[in-house]
Length: 190
Image (cartoon, rainbow, N blue to C red):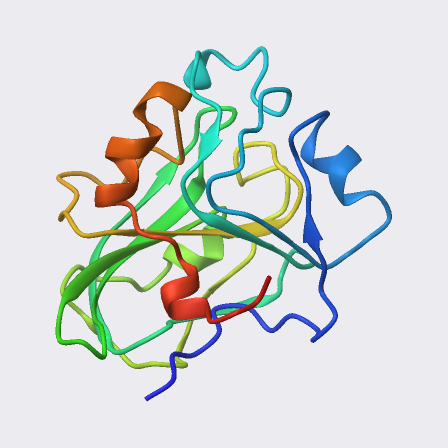
């Protein structure tokens, strides 16, 4: 069984490099693109107190216009939802517990959503693969970032509606044992 794409990107959406400059600079005039797991974004997080010393990206970023629908990658249940409002944070966030094709359980963080995405949500509610679960938020609500979805997967159930979206380079080898590469559900998108 294939997983559902969380954001509908064109087939030619390019992987983008964000190791220097801001997300906006890396995105340029492109509307769609992909920011990669494991990328060391030393310049992107410079000056953000929330990211001090943490620069290695632990999810995949799927860039699309604000308001673009976001879909569940697989069947599951809503574990938690919140608005992480700090500058540089996720803004409106959902964490969904999904069962993978292998039978293992994974926890997926869907971050940088619109505030409307939190309306009508209840912890424990079932979610179906391909079901619209929200929309991409704009810079005014998503932590101050260019419009995109941050998708991050964890083997460990989060205690709160959050995951470290970036880690220190010295912590990456350990962190990737908990936060698996999202391509495991996204497929070969880059």
